[in-house]
Length: 381
Image 1: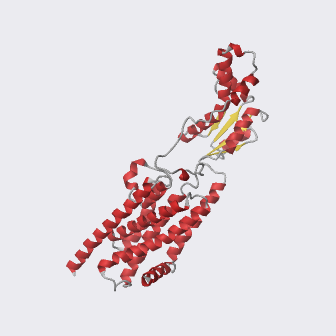
Image 2: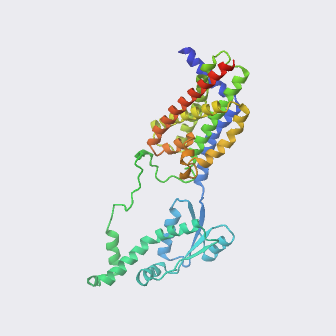
Image 3: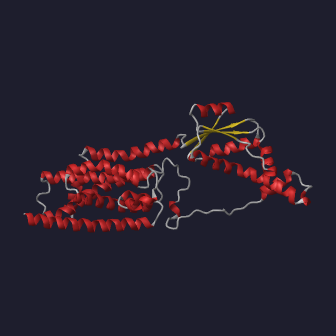
C-alpha cells in the first residue's frame, strides 16, 4: 500500500515539472477572476439609455429608478435630457433611447380610458429581434402603473356607487390588497432547491462550462504526456496489457488536481452551492474526463495527430456544449463531451447519474479497445 501511495505521489509530482500543466492550472483562477471582474462592471448585450422630458415627473422617475436597479442582460443608463439620449444613439454609444413624456401619469390614464398610445418615444439605431424584445421589458415596467390606471377607469365606469371616493382613496384600496401567490412558478423537477442560485449574473454563468473545458483540456494534455513517456520507454518494464491502468492513473491524477483548483475557485467566486455536492460532481466529472481522454488516446495512438486534435476539440466543445448557448438540436453530439454533464449537473440531479453511466461505459470501451489492440500486437509479434 505504501509503495502504491508513493507511486501516485511521484506521478503527481512529475506533473508540476511540466510547464504546460502549470499553465493550464493557472488558467482556472485567472478565468474565474476575469469573469468576476467583468460581472461587477456595467455591461449588457444591449444598452438602453433613459431620458425624461420633465425631470420632475414622479411616475417616470420611479420607472427609471426601477429599471436602473435591475441586473439583467440589458444595461440601462440615464441621460440628462432627451437630446443627449438621442445623441448617444446616433453616435453608437447606446442601442436605444426611451424618452418619457411630460406627464406620464396623465398619459397612462388616457391610455387606460380612451386607448391613447405612443406616449413613450423610442429612438433606435436599427430594429432587430433583440431590440424588440427589450420593448417587453418596457411593457413590464409600465404594467404596475398602467394596471392602476385601468383599475381606476374600470371603477369609474362600472361602479357608480364608489363615485364619492376620490382617485387617491381608490388607489389606497388598490395598494392595500396584497397577493402573495405568483402567476407563474418556474421549477426543474430534476434539480435540488439548494442549487437554485436565483439572480446569477449572466456574465458569470459560462464560468462552469469554461472550467469544464479547461479540465478536459488537461485530461487530453495528460494523455499526451503518457504518450511521450511510452515513446521514451518510461513504462517499458510494465506489461503491455497493464499499461492502460497506469495510463488511467496518470490521467486521473492530472484531472483531480485541476478539479481541486476548480472547486476552490468556484467557492472563492461564490458560484458553488453545497461543498459535498460540488465535490461529488467534480469527482464524477474527473472520471469522465480521464475516460474521455484515454479513449481518445486509444483511438488516436499518434502523438502528433492527437496534439493537432486538441485545439480543434476545444473549439468544438466551446460551440457544442451548453456553455454560452444550448443548441437542443445537437443533443447527441453534446453527450460525447464531459463538459456537458458538468454544466447540467449544476442544476440537474439526473446528470450526476448520467456522469456515472458515462464513466462506466467509457471504462468498458477502453478495456475492450485496449484488449483488442493487445491481441493485435501479439499476433504481429
